[in-house]
Image (cartoon, rainbow, N blue to C red; front, side, top):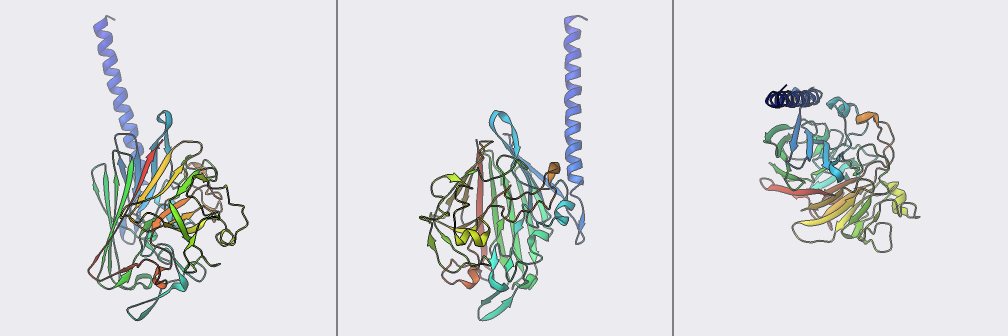
Length: 376
């Protein structure tokens, strides 16, 4: 074989190899997508993929508006998925943990005894967390199918219409969440909503993170910094007492970076109530955009920074994870193997006049945004 023939042979076989790899990748993508196609409430669920030129990739399903997978390019080019999830929509419909990666609404976090008054009228919500309403009630957004419109590789718009009286909340609510993946390795979530009646609203996302990689073990050695001088202490049912207390001298002081587990065994009534961290932090920054938190995986070196327009941040340390759900790769949702950092207004705000208002007036537009920026 002469040099020219060898060159042509190599080029031809390289092209065939590339086509084969592309076909395998497309087949894998198709299989993933097919696993998320299911008839729910008369509509078909699906899987959507966002990606950027750096190798960052987000997978989202319109069932619950969920972040299914988030792949981050780490050190030496290693790709790490930092979000817990399932390989099919049936994993989510059958899970005993309803909130994996979900868009939370109409009200994120707890409302005491499922009751509040607005414009002189009392409302009773569905109760699903002891005596309280949690994350929108028994059939919150996590169980709803959103309509979806993908805008290229970088953006996905999800819409859901809440009926007047759904889960007890007043007003027909048109809710929207837009996922945007930037070339700067930022995942941005923009929330919008309008109601035809005065109502209350508090939208957020409930991704379970492990920056060392899904299924990699405890998150207690992750290094965490929360930019909050105060937090809202709770009662035994995790409803805020109404007080805003300084974090100084408590296990809730994350103003300087420390490991999540550093003070977990400190004798403290609040840690006892939450079986660890499950508390709202009052962000110190008063600007429209607030630098809320910074976390670093102790093994991966992956760093996540959170910015938000919200006044609070709920830090949940995975205290109620009980190894009941088999996740991707055969791993289970073991105790404290993931954490959540939910940007939000404060829990029970409809019953706490001293807290920032969560009232959305009829015809007005609710807007909230949060950014999760990754580096290593």
